[in-house]
Length: 109
Length: 415
Image 1 (cartoon, helix red, strand yellow):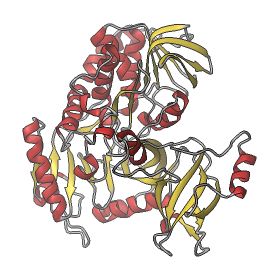
Image 2: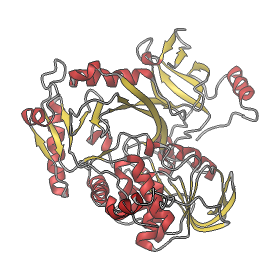
Image 3: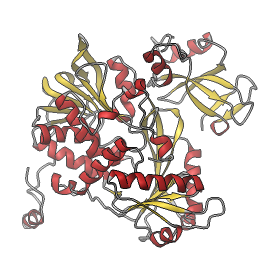
Image 4: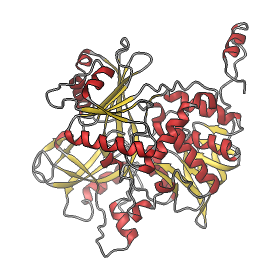
């Protein structure tokens, strides 16, 4: 069973206590944006085979949203971090780069 | 190709069955094809078959990274139905269902289509109203369904508990001409017919790159070397996102795990397919006597072909409540497949940002039932370069235009 540590309340929560909320670090576009930007924000997804940055909600716990870095091919969790950020912390990026040589962070969307 | 028939069986019986051919050839990959289709699952093979049958295009390669029919085609719960709410989905799935009826004859291969009937249980007032609405919509669409009461449900499914404490059965949407089919045989039958038309099915050959110049695809790189093509079809279900990344565009889809399980074989006890969408489980009995059980998808992106245990637990709990006799059954096997789910839970059959590259994907949890219809529509799309009437509304442009085919709200949860 997938276990993630909530970065706010510090609980190592099993997935039944959490709710997956899709891709993280989406660039948000509002009503005045172009159709294709709005479409990309709402629907287009990286859906990577490998490292995935995603939003989770500690729905049966503290209720807060946080981010996680996880591999979609091995289910390995590289770490979780608070959602008030545009990119993951350095130690998570280093951990991923150590596991996937040549991997580097890039802006999505 | 020698035809399969009762006479052929008798003939071979007299010579110790030494005269059977291999069902399909295993050729080497050539340097160039008119059309390359990535993915030898049901939809990929059906696309190739109808390219040959309806449009005479037979210089086709179907490239498969594993073995043919070894992905979701071999992992689903084999349910065939077309009781959808929206006109465009009802048309596509009904086309598929009607092609299933004659598929064994068309392919000269027994796909064991069994139109045993499908019930979708209504267990809340909301579902009762929803399914009554679907039944009316189906009547207008020419899809034969009816809303039936709880007594009729009990009559059709004697093992069901219609007086459950949480969710009593209030009725059901009954499609008499839905049913099940033999999933592997569908892939094998199409593969045999495609091979017979001269198409090359290349197994254990993974695509590693999509070569392009000036906005069009020129070919693909594979683990068995490069191959050129005039047109490319991507029909790879759960791996669509990965292939789109190779080709340099994104899709409105995410890949998640969907699980199923089968019980030990028992005597015949249920001769229809029952889906219980409120409690999230569905069940049918295979010809071998196993109860074939499916549930809902996992919530998070996943490519590992295994899912979370708590989803199995939810499904089994729902079925124990709906069918009390299954509580003592032992389960034989449990497995997962990777399904690509779109924003509106309807598939994508259409063009991609690359001019001569076409995609059939996003079937989510309901791809098997659509195999012949999806293949038919994708073949037309590839042959003409423009979508035909069957898939006109299923293009990716619907997400930018806001023209969703919203079956996730319309049809409940299971597909």
